[in-house]
Length: 377
Image 1 (cartoon, rainbow, N blue to C red):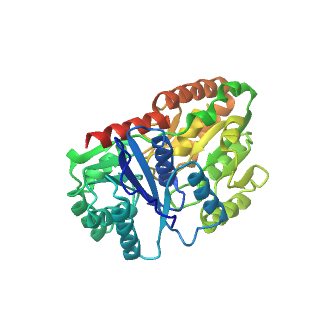
Image 2 (cartoon, one colour; image 1 turned 30 degrees about the vertical axis):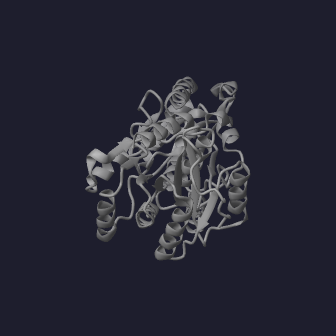
Image 3 (tube, rainbow, N blue to C red; image 1 turned 90 degrees about the horizontal axis):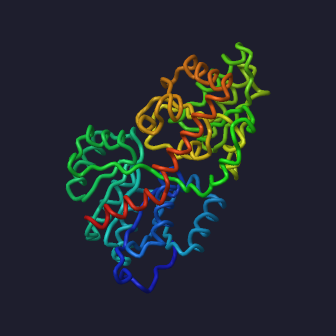
């Protein structure tokens, strides 16, 4: 845990907001980090980031990322994650020392743990941020979430689909709101210098290997494309669980696609990779608000995505990308064939996607929406 500042009172005129999230650097972590970094520049919000330690995934890379955040001036603390009670107790103690005005608990189960700790510490305002449309809510966890919603000022879904999921779980609709995720658009400032006709006619899927994602359907679609005389190179970027990666590698070998599929692992230059390729695919079973898809849109890629909650509403089928049924290799192959045989269509969709990302999904816009909500509470 980083040392606690001698100043335990918010700066004059600024509301102190503590963001609590998993330390696994998932999409939820990235959203919380982006919010904190944006709020550092605000004269109305004073951000604090608290990470729940992930013992199995903590490594030198993540420790370096934490240190880099601290060097940017962001107060970052780490609380134990080996047991829920240990997390709650440590976070409660931290809240009593730092005196936040608002505790924003991101993701599952962190929003349960964070709000319990915040309530025990007497934090005036509690906010839940739900980052996925499908979480492991047992009957007990669902009851906890409903009970905590009574003590929470707002329940935020990172997309309209996620907000609707909160309501379906029995949360009070009058407290729910949707604030779409945003990304750092400056990382894709040069996308217009990479028109579609100068990009490689390849495919990128940037996603961790996990139960939620579905690269296997994309691999099967690639096999169907080969039968039609199309052999695009597929770049799979992302870490995740080794068992899921091995299963995908095994399927690739079984279908004889080893010469087309490149397993990149963690990639240090996702913007560069996206801006070098023509097509991006998000093959998935469920989402909240996929940052990888927003990044591909900002990069000007022609995007194809599974039609699932969290994606619906981000991509407008036929205008800013193509939507296909989830787990349907034939439909996915058909969409990819259209883009590979019609570069003009890919160019139009990519340009429209980039314009939509710039207009609606910048991190500055996301920050302003959160800031307005927080100051109105």
